[in-house]
Length: 273
View (cartoon, rainbow, N blue to C red):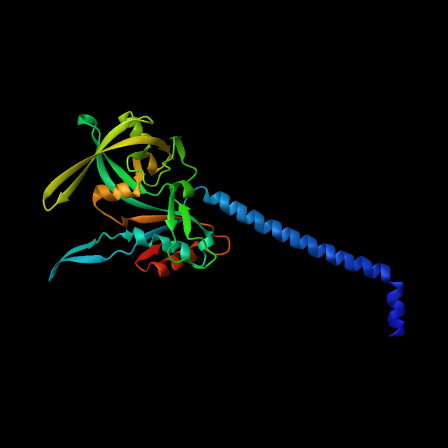
């Protein structure tokens, strides 16, 4: 022990330098890891600005058509997702990584007059909607979640304004190609006609809309018209129904498949892809 103490006393400076080196090295490593995680998260957020990365759809049933001995093939039954179930998306384990979502309900409407008449896809969705989380995952979670297309697709090039009022049933956002064909500008009014086949009778309903904004994305949105989901449901008499849900999820710590599986557990009749 005397020899050890004597040896240590002679090497105090070297030992001190070694200890300081270890401390500095540990501090640098911790800082680099912190910076790495921070950069990864920020990059993830930036990428999520370019749209949804998860699509939720209803599980479909395939029905065989024909008679005994005669097979006519099969058809897929159209199913919907209940809008009243959408709040459950924010109750999964990775709920804080769900940056936003937007439901979509499609229908074909007629627009224009005479030779200029054409069929256009009308899309009902959320733009800027407050969702009540009926049963939060944790008591510390907020019971209100604001979401919509404006959240998951801020990259849309919009001439004019976004639809901000979630109860607005007269405003629309028109795809740039539709606007060109019909000569529509921001602030213009126009009529759409929805034709429903009701027991072999064709019922036509006409609605007047205002162009709130003109959308340009270089995608399918350029050929569509967007309105608040409530209006689209009223037009086609499909209350509480949506076709699909686009979800924007930040997936640094887990694969997007994990989000899909957890959402499927909360809403058993849907599937994610």
